[in-house]
Amino acid sequence: MKVKLQSNSVFMEVGELDTEAGTISTSRKIDPSMKTDGIYEIIDGDILAIYHEDGKIYGKIANTTFEINDEASATIAPDGSENILSIIRDESPFIEYRYTPKPVDESDPTPFVESEDVDFCVFFRNIINTPERRELFIS
Image 1 (cartoon, rainbow, N blue to C red):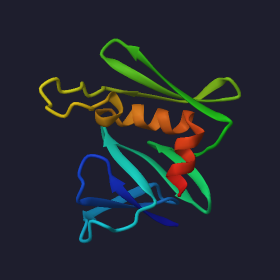
Image 2 (cartoon, rainbow, N blue to C red):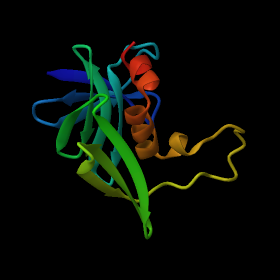
Image 3 (tube, rainbow, N blue to C red):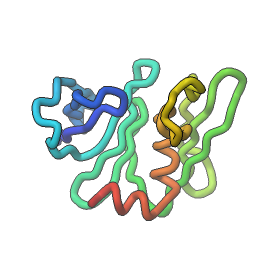
Image 4 (cartoon, one colour):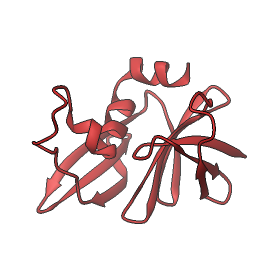
């Protein structure tokens, strides 16, 4: 199955994720109002994505795809200069993803920039941990 995803970092870029092969091909977004099934970011060469398909939400971190539901939760913990995004099921992590976080640009004149606006993994964690946001994501 192939799903269309909006790039998190480039507004006029979309990706087509082949959910079976785990690969993504990108192209320029021709129509700004184009409907997509989710959002993605490439971090340290890995694809991270959240998308909906058949009424369910899925997450993809590097080579692992999983369903996002009430049984999943996520945490981010600092570890030196890196962070660790952990996806938890049955009270234990089943995915631990290390990445270098992007700092909030203090010179950004936008008054409402939050950490999830610059750190896709924070956005990812917040979607997983908030049922209302998951519902909005599907609609």
